Length: 71
Image 1 (cartoon, rainbow, N blue to C red):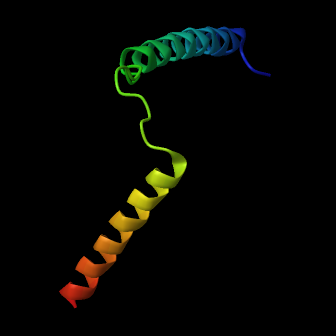
Image 2 (cartoon, rainbow, N blue to C red):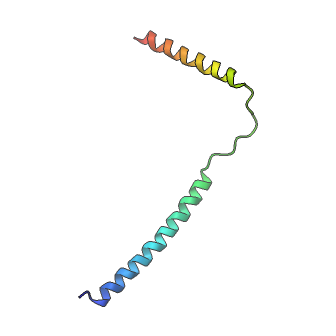
Image 3 (cartoon, helix red, strand yellow):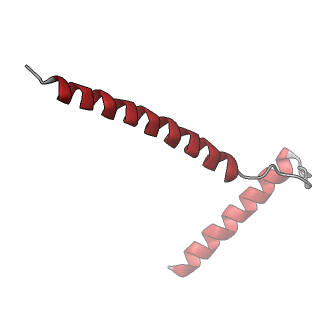
């Protein structure tokens, strides 16, 4: 049979673990709020979807050309 003293210590440790978990969760949420990226302001989307796709295609082609020239 397990002595009552050990059972009480286990219960106390479980209570401390719950308190620690709550504090860690609270700290994590505060850090996430503090380091969250700022909302984007100012520039709005100017390009249409087709123009954006053309720019992406052009950028990819230039990257492919640069990679071909390396080898």
